[in-house]
Length: 193
Image (cartoon, rainbow, N blue to C red):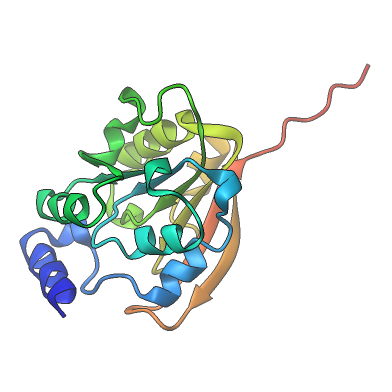
C-alpha cells in the first residue's frame, strides 16, 4: 500500500512524467521480462519507478551487480538505492543515457523500459533509443510496454534506425491493461559474392 501511495503522489506532482495512476502489476512485470535471462546480463532498466520490474529481473536470475537502473524521479531513485544497495541506480533523464558509462566496456543484452514513450516528444524518444542501443549488444533487445494497441515507437523512427518491433503479448491484469513490444535491430543482410 505504501508503494501505491508513493506512486500516486509522484503521479499527482508530475502526471506527464509518471503517466500512470498505479504502479505496474506483477503480471506486467512477468510479461515484460519473459524474454530476459541470465545470458542477457548485464541488463538496463529505464524508468524503474517502484522496482516492480527490477524484482522480476532478479527473480529471473539477473544478479543485482549486473543491473543498472535509470530513474528520473529522485524519490523513486532514493527508494531503489535503499532496497537494492548492490544495483547501480542513476538518477537522470533516460535521454542522456548515451553519454554515460553503465558497465564499463561491457554491453547489455537487454533494456527493460517502463518509460511513458507515448507522452514524450519524438526527439526525446529518439534520444532514448539511440542511447539505449548504444549500450546494447548487436543481438540485444529493448522491451517496452504501452497502454495502446500499437508499438509506442512510431514506424518512421523504427525505420530510420534500422529497428523492428514485435508484439510480445498483453495483460488485462494491469491498471490500465498493457501490451509489451520487443524492439531489436533488423538483421544485416548477407552479402552476395
